[in-house]
Length: 113
Length: 111
Image (cartoon, rainbow over all chains, first blue to last red):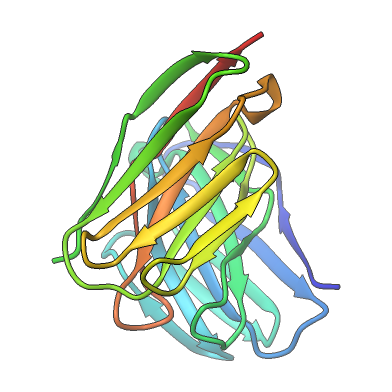
């Protein structure tokens, strides 16, 4: 069966510090991968998605970036965090089928102080 | 621009009661998803609705889709406390990658 791992679970970082969140998927090949952000009490905002190694699409311009160095690895990064980057970050994957639902990781709660 | 509206945004109800959450969307779409999120947790896929008239049921939850009315409903039958969560609907854009999400309905079921 497929599983998705995301870490760390929680993170407290000062403004201006770098960020690296990692997500890996097991049990499937060539998944579509996604990074979402959820502000407190809000819906989901798609940040990036990837359909293959090295292929990244950005949905929202900001100081975050994403990379996919391996088929089942997706990394969210920032060189300098802003206070507004605080939130709940969720990695997700789905298969190539048009109706494939998203499967989410457990999320990373980021607080920028 | 595709917009998705859920209502109500907050619902407090007693165990044993029935209620419906509504998800309206603004333009044509052929795929609608329902997810559940427990407090502080990630999201779990509940239903995928693919065609007009589609109805899916899992336990006390039943979801339906009316593509002509651009409306999906999530019906809760004889609610139990364990169903307390936030429920999101999401509608696909043209591609498989972009989903437009509703704001979520926070459901509290009191014992």
